[in-house]
Image (tube, rainbow, N blue to C red):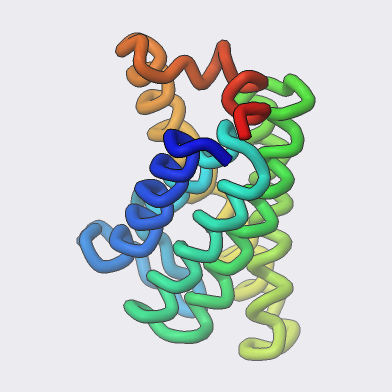
Length: 171
């Protein structure tokens, strides 16, 4: 992994850890929580490859564990898998929009599976509050991420949308 990619991974991981502490716009409907922007580091990390996405997901889990406790931290740990799947799809040439759409229900399902031991088989809390809530939160953060990615592309410093293969292959 080159220095630039390592630096970007470190910055995205730091953001993933800090966002749960710094963002004040949170929706809390137990067992569901949503912190606006918390998926943005995960989405951006997908463009830098699976290893970066995994590290950023681990950072997200740590940040939420430290700020909101083990259940929310366990749910945030699912960012590891969502980011990994997204990174592999982007590496295959899939568009960010399609990746966002494909990973939204996966993200919702993974978070539902995490909370089953804590809430039992309460369909309302599992499917409606957590599953659909997570998919909607995922989608809102995908839109925020898209705006940031397009802005970075215009800056000519990072062309994430157009140079994704080159970024991922740079080790």
